[in-house]
Image (cartoon, rainbow, N blue to C red; front, side, top):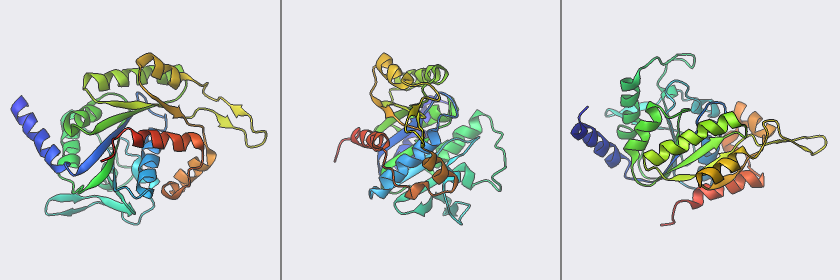
Length: 268
């Protein structure tokens, strides 16, 4: 694709999303760190505060976001050749390839160009309208999906890096930080997920996956540390039972994380 054609496509995307004030990419270097749970929880927090919020799932091969949502509607509507986002809850619009598949067991077996075109369509052919925030749940790694989004969405974007404490995850997230820097995407900060479990019987903190790796990474890479989020069985249950949108987050570390992300964007 020529640079002129690519720039024209980017301009089409940016014209379509110009009504979106703030865009937040949720990234990780590897899978299994709870990135989709964090993306959905952040979207729920903002929507429940009255913010007009969008949630875009760009994990083409493993769309997780529909699994958090309790809705009888299973497919996105199309009107005048435009995709209409799902609106399962107040103030929340959701787009995912999961709402275009015939079955939740369908596998998407696509190479790069097809994924590029799908993501471009999610950004240029969706009726997003006016939004305060768009949360983008990216797949693990630094591949086609994340690259396409970073190149297309432009200004008003920040990235949240999700890691777990152990070094294997931290090493992969280190690469994701470098990825954002190479693409000039501002980094909101690093959050350490699954950082300890409070024993429900004795109250002692059990570091199942060690602790402190996320904070050490933030210091090393000179980016903000957004906090250490504990494993909360009630959040796991709420997610599995599709009650997470209405879950009352009371843990001070989780609430502090939400607030730090929100404060990254200047008030208008």
